[in-house]
Image 1 (cartoon, helix red, strand yellow):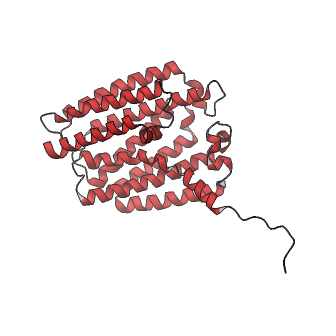
Image 2 (cartoon, rainbow, N blue to C red):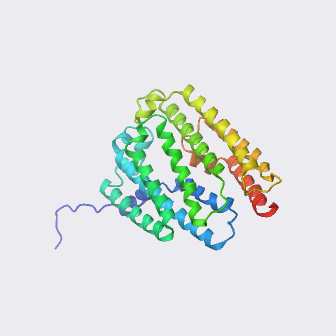
Amino acid sequence: MESNEAVAAPPNVSRVALGLLRSMRPKQWTKNIFIFAALVFDGKLFQPVPLVNTLIGFAVLCLLSSAVYLINDCADVNADRAHPAKRNRPIARGDVPIPLAVAWAALLIVVSLAVAFAVNLAFGAIALAYLATATLYTFKVKHVVILDVIFLAAGFVLRVAAGTPLVDAERFSPWLYTCMALLALLIGFGKRRAELIELDGRSTTRASLDHYSLPLLDQIIAIVTGALIVSYTFYTFFAPQLPTNHAMMLTIPFVVYALFRYLYLVHVKGEGGAPDELALKDRPLQVTFVLWALVAIVVLYIIR
């Protein structure tokens, strides 16, 4: 016997699943590639065990970062709904229920940390530190001017540090930590500049943006860019694991061009709000990165 009563439509499972995947922001997993720095620069790229360990570490960081994005979108749901672009995020739009997003984030955290500590205790501790730093940023620090970008930079440095215990690094230069910190600061302040331009005088949804100005950000970006070029140059000359003929200096022009290209995209093209998207769509940056990597590998694995 058929009922005449209205039957509630079942939830759109595919829409929710797609929304969860989008909220995990897989495009931004490219940021976790920095965990491979220790593998490459410690001369162990072609050793099976360090390579497998680093690939596992990369997967762990991807899951952890996705959990942080889910938590961030749940915490900022009201602010995102008032933002011209972020209102289209699945959680802000209502495609993904907040309790489901929180539960999925919790599951990602438990699984990723369990794997991290099983692989290496030191790596597990660094992964936990990354999660704590990212969580503190989400709920407090991202509203504090300047400190917000410093915490973002700390997350990138922790990504680099996470790779060292996985490969039992012996010759990883501290100069690379300095370069990574400066690069992250450059990208972070570039992103703040793009966000400021995007708002174009409208009320902000992030308290720290009220304290930034374009002249201030341009000055900071110029200082950080110069410091990054100098630090990378020092690395090519003074890192103990590099060839004594200083062949690594051949990579300096690629780094300089990539930085200038990024500044061009930020200042002239008005981009920089999503650095991960720049890396995926800007062909000159892609070509430069590939050439830099090829030259670096030749220097580290053949010339030496």
